[in-house]
Amino acid sequence: MKKTLFIFIAAFISITSTAQLRKDSIKIDPTLNGQYQLLLSKSRTLDGYKLINPNRLSLFWKNVRDTLNTTRRQLMNTKKEAVNYQNKIAGLNKQVAGAETSLASSNARLNEISFLGISFTKSGYNIFVWGLIASLTVALTVIILRSARNVHEAKYRSSLYEEINQEYQNYKVKANEKEKKLARELQDERNKLEEIRSNGR
Image (cartoon, rainbow, N blue to C red; front, side):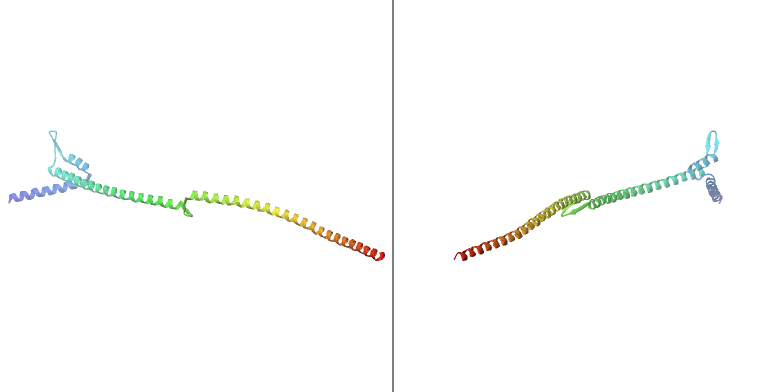
């Protein structure tokens, strides 16, 4: 019975001191450094040695182990997350590379124009079209100038024709009058000749 009572008292003291330790650690600073400082402040010095309550030391060690385990778990989780992020980054880099390749090919298709089955870049196509327009403009200018010269030449020749035609008409009229005059003169001479013949009989 005494033994049981002693065990009960020891357990009660242990629980009470553990509860007191927890209260002390909560009051001061819950970090390991705060708990260590509390452990030192609650210890006694005897002949230059620190006498530390075993319950306080056990609780401090338990807290150290818990902190280490938590830190290790967090480190493992962080490493796993880092690996996951690295995998995601690698996947995103592949997607970006694919998108860049697709964008480059799209830009190449946008910058390419097919004309009469020949592929041109936009700048080459612009040069070709403007060169063609300039050539056609020069050709049209030459044709217009030549046409104007030909029209002028045609007008000149037409005026010459009109002039020659007028001269010819005048010549015809004069020739007709001359012919009529000669015919009259001829008739007069014939009449005279007839008259002479008839008088001579």
